[in-house]
Length: 355
Image 1 (spheres, rainbow, N blue to C red):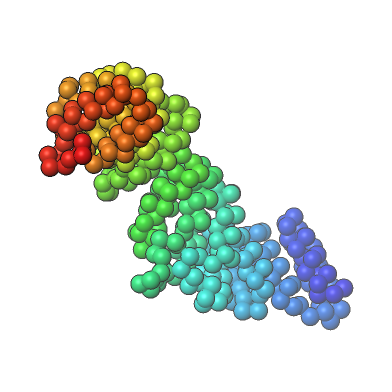
Image 2 (cartoon, rainbow, N blue to C red; image 1 turned 30 degrees about the vertical axis):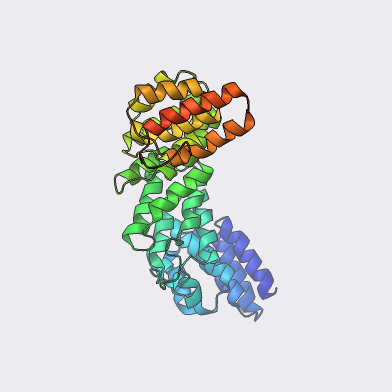
């Protein structure tokens, strides 16, 4: 009987809870003058934790912990965490090197253990482990929102209940491990779990004003899944969270996706107004979109109906494009009429749109 074989036997018997067989192996090794090495002690500590022999396990950690292999430290730490043996957890964490403990983005050793625990739905246990690690100290040039990102991403990917995700987010914020944990959660949801994203945005809104670009991923995904109604629903969400859509959001992400809605311009403008979009913000990107579609009559109708001023500099390119693509006399006449109508609504009366 060798120490290696003894360790394997102790591991097997420990897993099935046969403690008498474990003692027999130890007695046999002693009788054969086979020294108990770090592998044997590691299996005894792990087995003690698995089988509720916490006092014996804690004593083993105190006496032999420094010589344990990393694989046994990690396994023992996992078992101690799962069984809430707080003293063992504290002792085992202290056995890891300083550079591992103080990694500002969580060392892979602990990161992988956290992932295993999350897969077992041991969310509180993960927080217990993190709480035993030192609070990270960042230099001025370091990214200060990296701590716990992998954990948040894993929780979002697993679609954990929102209250559990928020417990982790709040823990990271309150313990000063990651002050932007909620922003990280929003970013992870936008990339991998879009159905969770609106709820997180509403929580974020309780703490700060939201920016229009936060809604861009949601607009794209909603259009893919629900078409134009999905886009309009996102505008409702923006209204509910008191987030005003800007010109870029409207021109790049909203208007190009609403071909059916925009067939009736008056009805379309009414729908935008009902969703909190200010006409003053909407009018320039709206007119620009119509110009790109060569809808000169609708442009004239809209500019007559609404007194909103236009950023005529932003309308130069679509006008030039239409004049270049269609060089017929009738088209030039239409362009000239539109230019005259737009010039009357210019925010800057000195801007020579016709010129």
